[in-house]
Image (cartoon, rainbow, N blue to C red; front, side, top):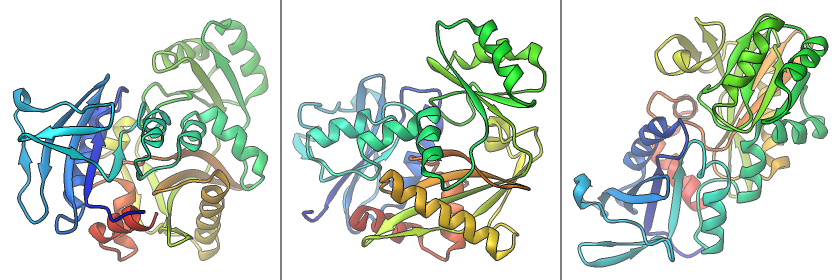
Length: 338
């Protein structure tokens, strides 16, 4: 890879998570080493990609008023700033949801041969769909997976709900297979409420997963690759005041995130080892977070987050700080050695 000098941080998204993605992108851009790189912040939503701020090496950040934001030329992913054409050596993707987490943006950048921070387009596409990813993980035999049922939009919801209720123990979690931040997710305690929850999940996407709830402790762990070695960060235990780790618990302070988790070393090692193995088996790149439930009968997989939240209060930055790493140096490692 040639020396990286000019970085585009892409944030926003076409999904319900776009505002969270903006906060993640702004934080990431602020922590990228301004003495090493020129950093350009690009807000992207529904095909409109605009430069909202930039920071030249060693200089102050320059925010742009809405009426003076140049648009990205998608033919070569360049932008005109003060009459000068800027092309990017690297893209740090901070879009939660499509297109930056679904593999679409990655595919575009791959065609232009522009390196980026996240998993490849194919890996991103698998990981983005909760059912596809869970099916892949289940076949690896690295971790337990809860019983589930799957439905496409257009199928008979009432018939599906009857079948799922007969096969799964309640409570169950009903979730769109794409998206994050708990949008469209419901915890359902009785069969009568299942069809309504499925219809609600369809508001976020065309496929829905109904998953049997697992009673246990919720853990999360992130891994990243540096110089050919996959490393796991300290694990976090999520203790929520709500029924589950929903949007309110995530973003409105109704949960505690204990980092490092107060668990025996064998549990911490199990979660970290499993995370590293899933990261390698999927072929991940950049920093990727895995979520789990630890139950009496073992560790259960929940999901993979290929573009995890990166605000100052997010889980991955907490792991980085707990590991004794400097955030700016960590991001430089992802950019230079991932």
